[in-house]
Length: 241
Image (cartoon, rainbow, N blue to C red):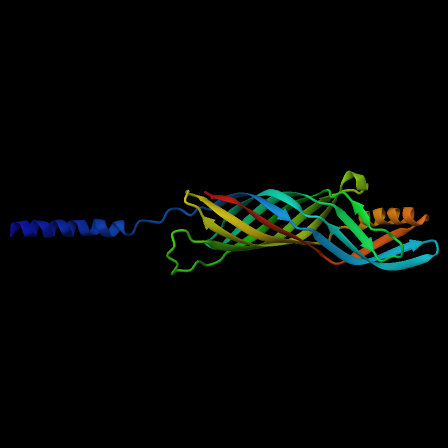
């Protein structure tokens, strides 16, 4: 009888300890993330009209400018301000492929140039999407969307004779992340769009010079067109701390 009373008393004393063990505070939230990545910036296309001017008058033609894609290494850093919202900043570099420009102006050959490079810098507000509560997998993939301002610096190849230019852009991205078995590490992939109006004055000067040489008389050129979309895919490791 005494043994049963002792066992019951021990169980009663242990109950608060067991209950408190079930109410352990969660580990502190990992607010910072650093993500080196390797991406690819796709060929970008520009279409519009070109106004040629010579001593006899003005002619208007359509033009198409293509700049080849290239590998894009970079790095991003993030700060998680709340459970879902945060801020990020990133920088990247892309070596471009060959550039071509053609018009339907009579008897004018296409213009070809070496590629040059693009530099990207951007800031963004991030939004983590909700996770599914009934997902019982050990490693849950997560998703994130972000939007913010960016700066795109275009550096043409030296052979073109054009000057470097800076353009403001609107950046938007969607990303997916899969945690890895190592604490703090995950794999992240993303698709990005930099929407910008790239300056065309230097391209127009080069085009006018090229047309003047082909036709044997002085021509000026003025380009007009809409926004340019610079699409990028990237993947890399992320470390949360």
